[in-house]
Image 1 (cartoon, helix red, strand yellow):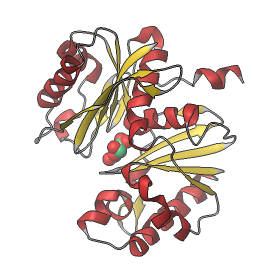
Image 2 (cartoon, protein in one colour):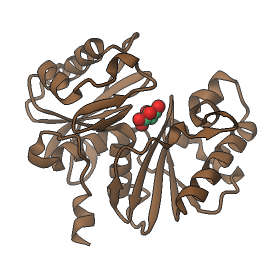
Image 3 (spheres, helix red, strand yellow):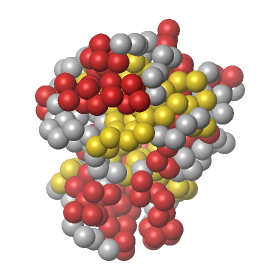
Image 4 (cartoon, helix red, strand yellow):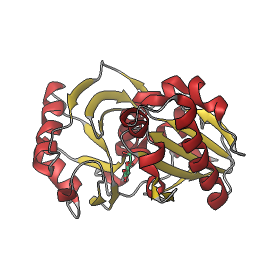
Length: 262
Ligand code: BGC
């Protein structure tokens, strides 16, 4: 099945059609800057523009940078407070003129990594973490997702962890890799202590440069770079839409099909 995957991020919005059986993009991704301010109306219009660029008539899935329960946004720290309580499924479906399934961006990126990337063979408790404008987390027990974990916002050194360990924190504070990696290490150690993790998959754009910081980490769990990198969000959004109940995007993330067979 081909599904249009859309990844809404704090700075950019990307879309591409995905073959959900192989996890491969079937056309070059299109990108738009995330509107500023990122109000619901402005983001919905940008999403509709991405759909128009592909003249898309099939299913659409969307990864959203905030917790989304049954289609309703619970908060989007890096977009705008105006999103609180907005029904993103209804808003995007109206803007696109067709059903759009919506789930948290890290959750869908995690689904893609667990199906087609670094988590394929993973057993036990895996945390997929995306280091970008914010910190996204997706928790899997074997291949079953616990949706909407917001571990990017735990307190670390008296601050929101995102302010210490996101890729944006590194850039904004012009931190060297070593100094930034110390914060990431403390963050991951905390996650391991709370969740007794077997494996951590580190994604987000910065995972392209994983050799600069993963070797500096001392955390006890196995830590591996994501394989799908920047495409995980697009691929996962498409997978989510393909497998959401009725393809409509109830906002409820479901376990991957491969996992259900196991
Ligand atoms: C949001 C998460 C999101 C992450 C990555 C955080 O600020 O609270 O829901 O997954 O950023 O975009």
